[in-house]
Image (cartoon, rainbow, N blue to C red; front, side, top):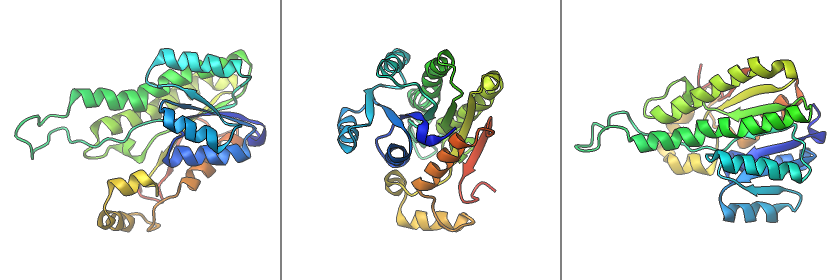
Amino acid sequence: MNLAEAHVLVTGGGRGIGRHLVERLLVDARRVAVFEKDEATMAELTAMDPALRCYSCDVTDPEAVANSVAALESDGFVLDALVNNAGLVHSAMLINLLEKEHRVHSADEWQRILAANLSSVFYVTGPVVDHMLQHRKKGVVISMSSISARGNAGQSAYAAAKAGVNALTRTWARELGGFGIRFVSIAPGFINTDSTREALSEANLSRLKDQIPLRRLGEAEHIYQTVRFIVENDYVNGTVLEIDGGLAI
């Protein structure tokens, strides 16, 4: 697939990796659409480039997703690629030994993180793939996972959700490969974004870099280069690409 001819949908393009993906795709792809629930972010994105189509959509709401896919189709999009980028990072131990009360991981937080990171992928991918099939498109679905999917202390819900994303990627690759629709997960390590720097002190960042064989954080551009590679290499399917500088070795 030639990215220059592709219609691409990105979920959660407001900041960090998602924002960088949208900015680069606006230059390199034929048409770009974003599903975003924050109105202020939508206004920001639209002001950035009038060619970008933004749809108000909470990707944890299957009805909202179905309506947004229908609206996108009405606007003349025939999707070649979907990037499931929307999600939330959350850290909490199963048992917080420092607390006397409410020591057990919140069930509400568990549901919220799974909805944002796993259910959203299911809700968006179904209607989009059906759209591709109806238009007889050989498309690709790229879902953002994480190296936390391997299991990461303090991230029960997040790790479980991202492991689920990887399982869906492999399952759907088996189901739909015969129709020419591919599924790939990208599992970033620590990427140099505002959210990473907000979450970690400089001392912790320094210690983290020492654990990465390349001794540096990744950049959002590394993730974009991976997205482009997946879109354009039509024999990549059913796999998880870890973009982590070797951290998971």
